[in-house]
Length: 378
Image 1 (cartoon, rainbow, N blue to C red):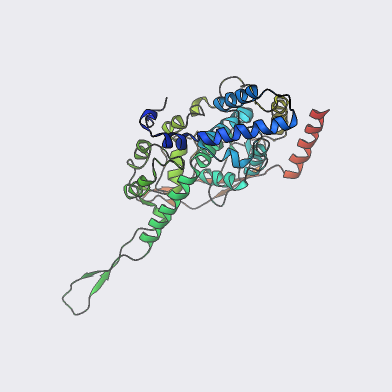
Image 2: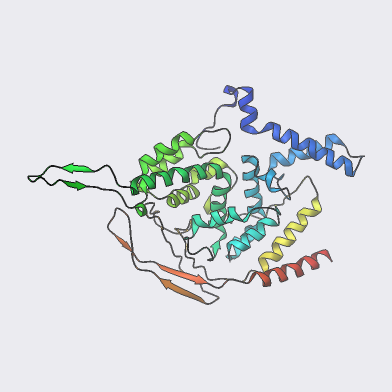
């Protein structure tokens, strides 16, 4: 159970309950699925079809091979799809493979063929620097950032608007302050924070607080946002996103992924779908073949602080960087070092190595995956 209690369903009106839990969406979709199956097989049992549908809905297995519009339609669908992705491809993390955002998108499209690449790009920006989106990402870092971006998409878009508005306000000249002097000339003083320093954390919380607890989109618990923003003087937008992705309380509130320490533990889970059991086997076979052709990379990435890295997150730095120590590199990499970056408000410097890595070409991966698919079909 979440550490943050949800609104008591018995205190809701009927209309709010239906809207909050999207009951009408699932009733409409279940009838639509029933009619489609009946057109293909007039002898089907409607009670059995509906029972299988709502069983899959309860277990979170109802998003497999569904179109993006349906997966994106409700918070339950989004969270269930994230869990489905974790179940299917957890072995990638166990093997220690690092993948590019194009490869992660390819894996996602095996489960949802029309899933947009833009969401994967936004996910990468939570982890990587803006000029390093071609670098590789560990499975653990990706899955929690992907959950944050996909589940809270509308809320984060509005938070970005608030952040940009505050940045524009503080970057423009303040009202001039006239300091009297002994001469006729007047000295005008103007002061403002540099946009790279982020924004005042308390002011930012007051700006995003009215966005919380909405019916039409999901928002993190207010108490969790207080824990994030009340402990730092200033915050950058991507520092804010990373803090949400790293928050165990918010992850528990969503309630689909295990804690970070257990994300790669446990046996492989068996997934069942109410649509076609043979499709499930095809997903596992395709996922296994896809992960097998991904070549081992050194576990070094040019990224923001990893969920696996030690030490606190510097939320004041608009481009925080963390580097994992390479564990027996198995491919060549070229390192690039930047000048020390000044940490906002601290007066300290941080020198960080940044690395570029070779990525397996998409043509090679596509050819190999096609061969594996042919083998599976045979």
